[in-house]
Image 1: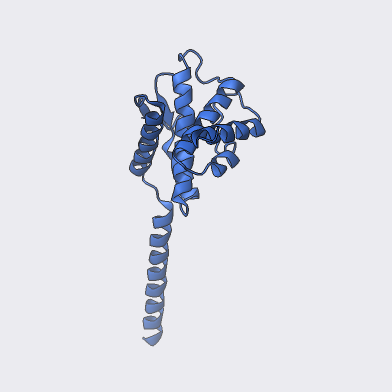
Image 2 (image 1 turned 30 degrees about the vertical axis):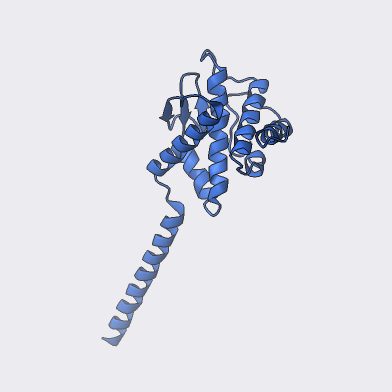
Length: 183
């Protein structure tokens, strides 16, 4: 009887500890689609305000690997954004900067395209979008280094064309300095 009671108490203790760990893990790792949508919409709205324009249609799409513009709207994958938020959850300002940079990058494509072949950007178009993202980050005084460092890691290259990382980093830095009013 004592053995049975001690086993039950031990099982209860293990279950309680497991449940407590699961609660802590889910608090850090679960990011709701609704919260991701609000974050993306907020950052896009702020970038559009800096551009002095209206906010384009924003579509949640699991069919794109990250974020894209087709010239008539901006599409984003909420799983991709959630992965950014989870990855940088200890530094919310960094998450904000990465999402802001991505939305500013896509906003640049949105304004520069006629929609004819929007998913196949030229290297110059990518560099221009990176520069605009840097500018917006500078205007908002958000950190650019993480955006610059992981731009390839986050697969911000749209379509098949990709500018070399050093050129992209230079475009982001130049835009950032201009956004800060240093140029």
